[in-house]
Structure formats: structure tokens, C-alpha cells
Length: 249
Ligand SMILES: NC(=O)c1ccc[n+]([C@@H]2O[C@H](COP(=O)([O-])OP(=O)(O)OC[C@H]3O[C@@H](n4cnc5c(N)ncnc54)[C@H](OP(=O)(O)O)[C@@H]3O)[C@@H](O)[C@H]2O)c1
Image 1 (tube, rainbow, N blue to C red):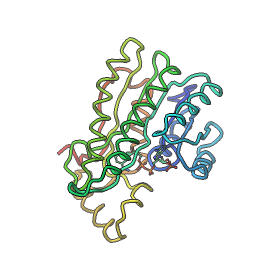
Image 2: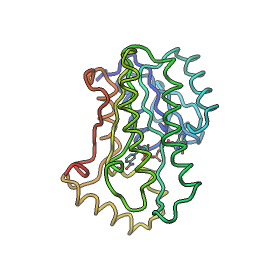
Image 3: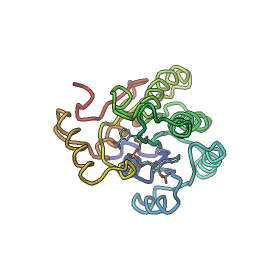
């Protein structure tokens, strides 16, 4: 039960959904976990749920000043980072024909630019044997209506992992990707669907997945734990789909 004993981890977007479940699991497995998010109240609630081995640091990954403050604080408190789960991200719907500059800039600004600078600014704190896990999505390899900008950001994330695992070869830092399938989280509240529409959406996705259902945040957390721990020491530059088979068949 101590697969992360003594490790220091950072999970961006650790106050909700997949990030929060992963933070709970990491702490249970012996890690000290820093979590981030933009909303202070959500962060405090999350830290209380994770336990004494957690600290919340408020910040927006799209803001480079916030990222600088984040890593300064981690350096001050713990001096190093062994695991980075770059998880914070957003997805909004906009069919081609209605895509605005603001939609593009917001989605790429958080998911791509924010993830890139999160990882780059974390590197000075990360030593040999560290692990980076990026959160992409099955959306990157599927055509989902009105979701093309989000999908493109997640394709970029997958590509980053290939390039960065090579760039970090000499430092012996592994970079892998987890690609979740359909996993209801508080993010789904922002999709603007009625209860009936959401039920239909989830049923449709359950029917397509060979496993016959949608996923739980805790199921993604288990995969992230594997990629973050030394158990995956020979896994590098890879993408692990955790989607009940939705995008695999
Ligand atoms: N749920 C799914 O079905 C699914 C599938 C594939 C991939 N993913 C990916 O999984 C990741 C987490 O999604 P989720 O479903 O767990 O969403 P969620 O429950 O809405 O959680 C998102 C977390 O990220 C934080 N966050 C959002 N924007 C941020 C920013 N700019 N800077 C810092 N923190 C930010 C949120 O806190 P604040 O709002 O307080 O900032 C929250 O803690 C995302 O990258 C998403 O694309 C999700």
C-alpha cells in the first residue's frame, strides 16, 4: 500500500474530479501531495478530504506568474518534486462555423500553453527517476461533434509526451500520458445539457464501450498511480487509454 512512499507530488487541478481522486490515492500510497486550482474554497475542501499529507496552492496554469509562485512555494516547503501530474484542463463545445478566437485562445491557453509551462517550470525541481504524467483524452483520436478544438489540444498533449521523453532522456525523467474515456466529473456540469440530455449522452457512451458503462475518476487515478510510480520504470513516452475500450474498438 506504499507505492509512493516518501515521494513529493504535484497535481494541477487537484481540487476536483480526476485530479482530486488521484491526489487522495497518492496520499494513501505515501506521497506528500501539492494540489492546485483557481478556486480557494474548493482547494481547502479538497485538502481537508485528502488529509495531512496535502497542501493546496491557488493558481491558474495559464498564468505564468502563478506558475512561478507555485514552484517557488514547493521549493520552499519541500525542496523538490518527484511526480508531476499535469491534469488541469478544460473542454467546451463549439461546432466548426461557430468557433471564436476566444474559444480557441482559452482552450489552447490552458490545455496546451498552460501544460507546457507547468512542466517546463517544474523541471528545475525534478531529479533523476522523476515521473511526469500528462492528462490527454480519447477525444484526441475520435471525431466528437463540436469538440474539435479540445480534441486538438489533447493531440498536442500526446505529442508533447513523445518530444519531452526524448528531451529528458539524459535527466532520466519519464513522461507518459493517461487518456481517459467518458468519466462523469463536475466538469460535466459545464456542458450545458439538461438532465435528460446528459443521461442520453452517458447511455450512448456506455453502449459503445465494450465494458458497458462510463468510468469513475478513481479508475483513472489507478492508471496515473501506475505511470507515476516506479512500477512503470520501463514505460516512457507512452499513452495509456483508460476508457473501457470506448476508443479502442
Ligand atoms: N472527465 C472526463 O471525462 C475526462 C476525459 C478525458 C480527459 N479529461 C481531462 O481530465 C482533466 C481533469 O478533468 P475533470 O473531468 O476531472 O474536471 P474537473 O472535475 O472540472 O476538475 C478540473 C480541475 O482543474 C482545475 N482547473 C481548471 N482550469 C484550471 C486552470 N486554468 N488552472 C488551474 N487549475 C485549473 C479545477 O479547479 P478550478 O476550477 O478551481 O481552477 C479543477 O480542480 C482535464 O484535463 C480533462 O481534459 C477528462
